[in-house]
Length: 138
Length: 138
DNA sequence: CAGCAGGGTTGGACACAGTCCAACCCTGCT
DNA sequence: AGCAGGGTTGGACTGTGTCCAACCCTGCTG
Image (cartoon, rainbow over all chains, first blue to last red; front, side):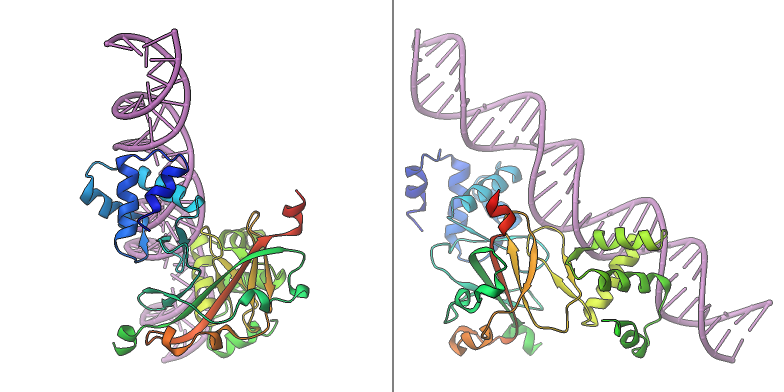
């Protein structure tokens, strides 16, 4: 994703220091951060960046398709920088840890026309839930 | 689900008028209501019922496995009274309408051991997204 | 080079969903 | 009738996210 900045520049995105920092944070650790976690890490690099800017920038990255929004629990949304590799998620039902997973098969083909009710189905999200090894041991 | 009240009684659930009203609301229309919508409908039948009680009761019904929590958008949770028929959801990406669907196949078998990372996977949620006929026409 | 336009940033106020809590009430039991 | 204990209530509170008006910064124009 080091080409992320190039891609954004190519689309006429004005590349401010704030936006660069947010992109760097997402590029840094490939984990699923909440907006506030992104903000905390961004502040470490650019102390005066505001929460609103982080929210704005994350929203823009999402609508540009460079980052995915994931909301597995009913709490804060998380941001997944791995937007160019289709994948699904495995979530620990106790601690909320998230892993990217790649199931075989395509669930889209598992939804017969009679079950589509005239919808133009374009996407599927699959969320597996279970106990992670740490929580299972505890 | 008219046996719902029987099942609850059988488990020693104290059947107050408030709880009965919440159960009736869920039983009434088989749609996916938010907690506030349940509250509004409950108030129509029992004017003095409080929001806290609705939340409490919904939470209890969920942990008893009588009702499912669904959160397809990042807004309010919705409650699905259809807990005894395994199914998944089809959501309109514009208006948020939800339909229950029954895909063929079992996505659990599509997740190889190497993709389970030691998790004890127990459940899968599949959410199909697309435009509903009304939104596609507009 | 000054002025300008327009997008980006800021922080504080606000909105929404949900949770918590102490006081109160109600029911069944003794 | 008195009591214990669970259920209910409403109001305060929290966490997450959005909105907005003022400000700033950059590149362009004359």
